[in-house]
Image (tube, rainbow, N blue to C red; front, side):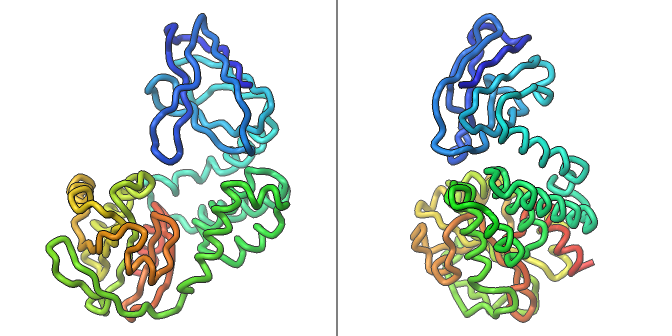
Length: 321
C-alpha cells in the first residue's frame, strides 16, 4: 500500500502511474485533504513513475510490496520523500551515485569518456554489492549502455539469483546480452535491399565508404520516438563527416510510417517492407526489440550496437573528430 501526505494540491488531483508501454498515465487515486492511498500488489518488485495530474517531473519510485509513504509539496516534486521500501532505498543509493555523471545521458551532451567509465564502475560495484536487488538489472543495463561490453554484462547477470533474472528487467538484460552475441562486433553485414519511402530499392552495399547507423524503429514504438531526437542531433552533427543513418521501420501502416518520419524530422533515408515484426531486414539482424541499432564502418563491419543519446555522440565523436 502507498500512502501519500502532500501539500499544495487541490482536492481531486489525480495520482497515476505511467504505463511503460504506452507512455500514458493510468489513474490510481485522487488527492483529498492532502492525502491519497494506492492499494494493490505487484507481481515482482519494479520501477514506477508516479504522476500528479499532468505535472512534470514524474516521481520515480521502486516498489517491492512494502508499505510506502510519500510526503512532499507540489512546488518540489523532485524532492518528494519516499520511505518504507528497501528496494527504493537501493534505487536511491544507485541513482545518487550516478547523479554527478547524469549529464552524459542528456541529448546533445558533450562526449565524456571519464564520466562513462565512472558510470560503468558505479554500476558494476552496485551489482556486486546487491546481487539480490531487483535494482541490479537496471545497473547492468546502464553499464551495457556506456561500455557496449556484453561479456561484462553477462558476468554480472550471472551473479543474480533466479528470481531477479526472471523479473521483467532481468529478462530484458538477458535479451540484450543474447543480442550482443548475434551479429557480433567485427562481423560484416550481409547484403540486403528494401524499398524506401518512394518505392525505390536501397541496398546496404550502397553505403560502403561511409559510417552508417542502421536504425530499427517504428512509428508506434514510444521509446523509439523518444530516442529519435538524439539520432537527429547526431545526424545533423556528423552528416558532413562521412556519417549517415538508414532507418528500417517495423511499421505495417504506410501512412503512420511516413507521418512519423515527417513529424520527427528524420531527414535520412528510410526503408520498410511494411511487414511489422516480419520485416526481412529485421529478421536478418534477428531484431527482437526496438529501438535497436547497428553502427557500420566504411567496410560494412559492425563496430558498435545499441548506441543511445550521449553514448552515440561519444562513439561518433571518437571516430569522426
